Amino acid sequence: MPPIINIHPNAEAVAQAAAALIAERISTVLQKQNRFTLALSGGSTPKRLHQILAASPYKESIDWSRVHIFWGDERYVPLEDERNNARMAYDTLLNHVMVPESQVHIMRTDLPDPRESAVQYEKILHRYFDGKENSFDLLILGMGDDGHTLSLFPGTEIVHETQRWCAAFFLEQQDMFRITITKTIANRSACILFLTTGKTKAPALKQVLNGPVNINLYPAQTIQPENGELHWIIDNAAAGQE
Image (cartoon, rainbow, N blue to C red; front, top):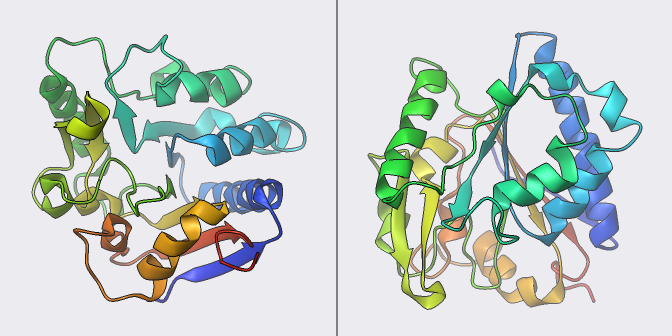
């Protein structure tokens, strides 16, 4: 199935459109099953998306008690650190909606070895998704100016990982460890939603969507659902229309 691309005037419109899609998908899926698995992303656009979901009408209309929360990747900094993706999600969304804490699965950053944290997270993923046709009901992703997504950065070995579902590695250009799910589990998602805004994303986005496949340069090209939907919600600037 080719990607479904929707272009909106600006970042605010992208966040509003994403919130509407997420709410509709949660409602539809929960009519057929008892839980909805949602993997969150970090970044500025998801931050605004969280704020919209945490306010009316979505705060009341979504059955948050049946939503199970995951993350696609994490910086290995303490939960109290503002760079921590889970911290941002708590501040902007999870502290404001009724998701049971037992259904919130952060990537732990308080262990001595980040690789152990990745092993523990992979066990959680296997507990949820072993034997299932799909993994996440919805995986939210962003894309960096360099074409990375999750913590799959250009030129890193993790881009090519096919066995592990979650891994940790040291990213030299950021001088920190990162934990990330891999394309292997990401591509089993029932629905993947890319949110991309800003003119600095336009060159990479053009290559990811229409250029030759080169996952070493543009790791976002590795995200191709096996039997799910792929949505891109982007603004005019990222689409090169400004």
